[in-house]
Length: 247
Image (cartoon, rainbow, N blue to C red; front, top):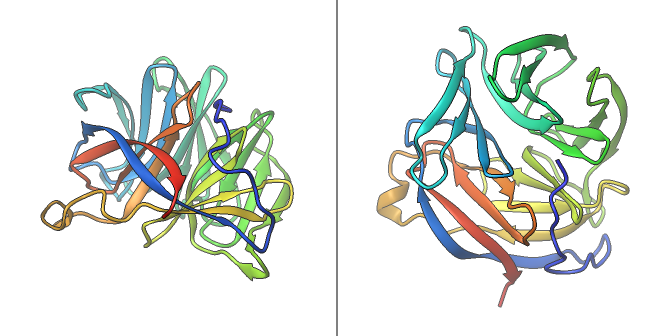
């Protein structure tokens, strides 16, 4: 899915990524037991993939209430990772199981499994291809029907590699990636791999709310706007935000 996302800050070149921050537009409840690995808004349907062995799932969630409308668990010991909508299906990654699962979007039922090499972290759809992260500085492009690799790009901020790329969101303005174990999201030009913006999301939860939670992870573009949904692993809240220039 490529969401319409008007440029909140035009790409400024490989050596000068824009510095942005999150301005909160709305706050929603989030399942505090969900170890969020993937997040995607398809129309008014919110899909979420969760991880951990024995707790991994893919689910359709009612955004205003966090009520789980549909849910399919992965068989243990599979460890679920990123998810993305592709036409009438959903692709779901696994971390170290070497398998991508294609699902029916309406029922979440498994359609097929496709093996891949290496780890699976984040996934999104960029026009006619899928974009996948594996925790390194590499983004792999894949065929949305077969899941076969069709290209790759290395991500750089200036001349420095950007690693720990995790959950992804593809938009017309670039690929947004959570940087694991940080409160940072980067925006990437998928053609060059250059980071065009670094976005600070620190402070969304209060110190008391952060107790017992894990890292920021989960980003979904809101179609037709320049806003995003963001959350984290085991977070009690989900935020609708707009990325604005940092002061």
